[in-house]
Structure formats: C-alpha cells, structure tokens
Length: 93
Image (cartoon, helix red, strand yellow):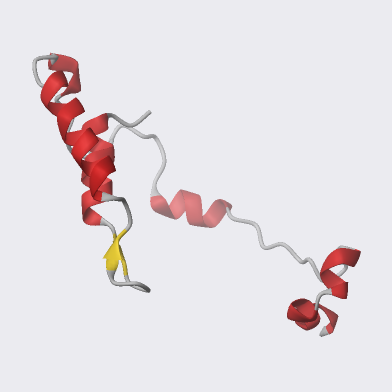
C-alpha cells in the first residue's frame, strides 16, 4: 500500500502528454498536501520516495526469462466485438 507521500510524488511527476495537462486535479493535490502536513508528525509516514528493495530475491533477468509467450490465434473474439466495425481487425489472421 502506498502512503499519501508516495501517491503525491507519483501524481505530481506524471504529466499527460496527450492533453499536455497534469493527470490529477489541483484539488486532489491540495488535499494530499493537507494530509501530508497532518501526518508529518507520524514517524511511520516519512517514506516519501518509492525506494527500490534490493532484498527481493530475484533479478530482472529471472523475470524476463520466466515470461512465457502466448499464442491467441485460436481464441475466438466475442460476438459483440465482431459486430462492431471498430474491431474489424479481429477478422484478420
């Protein structure tokens, strides 16, 4: 579970490139600031950054090697999708 500080950090770093705007409203950011101020006396809430945990017992190589390629060519699309013209690409093999 992320702390308010961590959520604040994520929300203030993320920028919507499509619309050139922040992803979270100023009201939400303001509310998070208030919560962080109220929680600032709590020693357990000082985890501001999203720290990497080096104690995780597997490497990135282990993860990438464990990925399995899936073949979905034999899976039939839902009838509702096939009726929608936006999903005509599903007919292509």
